[in-house]
Length: 327
Image 1 (tube, rainbow, N blue to C red):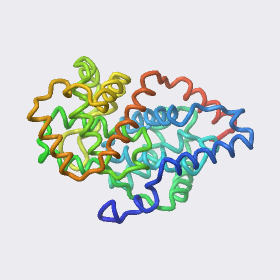
Image 2 (cartoon, rainbow, N blue to C red):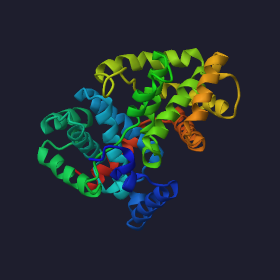
Image 3 (spheres, one colour):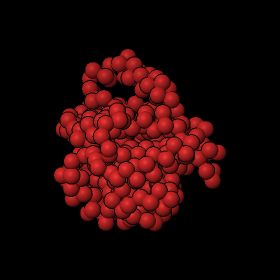
């Protein structure tokens, strides 16, 4: 196991470029088209599916009472897997359940395979076979496609290290957790080092979020408070991470766009606080171009989230599994 990201298999094998990711997905789509699967079993684009799988993983993690870190690892595994294997060649519900099962092992909070199967069947009904051997077989498939590179470095550690020096308030830390959790819906974990994603979440929480209307924050907090208790606290201690900020949707996106463009004063943040945070980012040596690119990625997510519904994804996946008998 690599002690840090810079010597890890994650950096060596799973830090990709946007062009590489696009090429991998294009290759899979072209293969599906050549086999006639793209027309027979149409699916929404990958952003829509990523949102749907994110919600499915969250629901399963909630039933298993998992903390955030194994859930984040499971999302990373699923994202990596579907860069190498077509969604149309798998049972996505069985695969995401397998990702959760394997992630719990790797994060040293193992859950019995029967518990995973039972809870998955409660959520996804006829799409999860009762035979635990099916999930075990899927686990070997997953490990093989990931080339046994299973250690995942997450941005949560960076947050824990800088929250005191930056004097982040409890409210700001909770907001950062939300942005970090949401970042796993995007490709950021495949594109950037964990510390860049963490600093992007801090940038969003400190400079952007205060510009969002207070009611949007209240809407988000009503769901995140209960979820934080359910998930059992933050990985490695500290404040428990809230769940998705999707209730803010395009409101966050609009506010972020304004902030990135240099509009406003972060919703009334004191000039001293604004200056302190600006100086820290300037002196940290962090790649601000990367921070802005990550911010734009998050804006794109919330824009997509604003109009997203799970019905099309749910029906498309069900049609695929039944049609190809992927049970």
